[in-house]
Structure formats: C-alpha cells, structure tokens
Length: 289
Image (cartoon, rainbow, N blue to C red):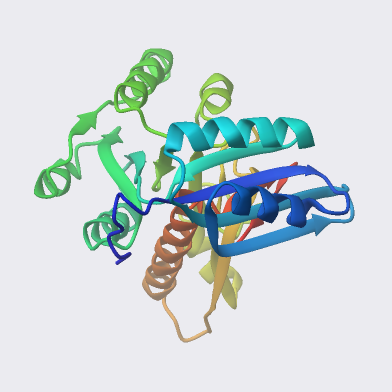
C-alpha cells in the first residue's frame, strides 16, 4: 500500500507531451524548482517517428496550493505549446466497472482495490446479468443490473452513461463486459475506458476461444488490455502478457491460465492508468512503468 502523505506536503503528477526540441527537461525541472517543487520521479520519451516528446514528473510542492500550482502550470505549458494534465497523487481515480457473467477480472480488481493495491475509488458496478450483485454487496458497492437487448441497447447505454456521470467516474473498466459498445458510447468514453480480452484475436473469434485454441494445439495463450475505441478490440494497447501451455493441458487448464493472465494484465493496466503513467501516442501508448 502507498504511504499516507501529509496534506501539508502534497505530491502531484504532471504529464505532458509536445513537439520535441532541445531544453524541455531543463525547462520543466527549472519551472518546478522556481515554484518550490521537489522532483521525486521523472521519466521521458522521445518518439523519433513522430517527433513528439512525452514526460511524466512526480513531485511534491510546498510553496503553492493546488489551485495556484495549476494556474502556474497552465501558463508554463501554454508558452511551450504542450498538452498536459496535473493530478494530486493522493486522489484516487473515481471508477465504474462493467461486467457480464465472467467474474475473474472483477473479483481480482475488487480484492486489489480493497487491499489498497490500486489507487482507484470503485463507485459502482454495472452488469447486464445479476450474477455478481452479492459480490458487489459484500464490498458495499452499488450494483446496477441493466439487461441489454437489441431493442433496448440505446436506452441502456444512455442509463450507463448517466450512472458514470453521476458517479463522476474518470475511469470505466470493462472487466469482461461482453456487449459491444456503440460508436457513440466509445466516443464519449474515449481515453478513459479500458477493456481486456484474450490475445488469440483475430484468431478464434466468438464463443469458446480456449476450446478452439485447444483444438488447434496452441502453445501460447495471453491477454491484452487496451483503451476502448469504435474499432472492436483494436484500441491503443496498454499491456499484454502470455503464458506457455502444452499438449497435456485440458481446455479447463487453458481457460484457468488464460483467466489468471487476463486478471493480471487488466490490473496492471488499471494501475498504470490510475497512476497517470499512460499517454496516448496516436494509435499507440507511452507507458512510464
């Protein structure tokens, strides 16, 4: 668990991106020094293909309150034509989780959250099935059962967005939510919705992917966590992992290993996103791990 920090010594994360040019790191560190900032962690990346520069700086600041700091940062980044965000490190990211009937990722996220291993604040669970309402109740989290049919899809998505807005969620996690989101829904959740799926795609689409993989004698199975876009399962990738399997394993063995991998990959993606370590870089991501 992250140590509790005194409100008299607030810690922030500044992320930024801009066209690469000499002196950016010096300018950022100089700005923070000038305004009483003490850098605790810093990472940067120069993308030679696009000419873009990315940076994440974690620092404490004693001389300014958050409102004053935000004002000064805004003036600084405008002068350098930067895209930016500033977050207090101690603020937990308001989160809504969406799930269907496979609960391994949901259960893993809830345990990690309750154990203080994820800097998120889970405010609601939305599902098109009732399977996990008791699990949600055991964690004292509101559970919204919203069945989906082709005829009600638009109304259900409107209600989902209403819940997300009411909870002021800055992150939506699709923890094996098995409904395809509309293009409009994807647009409204752009950059703040993370999905998880097995890494067989584009092979073994549809139902029972592990059965299909077993039939083909697959030797590697894995998982991919990515941002949600209108292109199904093709959003910018945050994290991936694989596990080796062999001929002696059953379909159930493959499924179990696959679910473990999915849970771990999704948890890492959620953690990095909520720690503001991920920056979008076109259709790719920069992850400051």
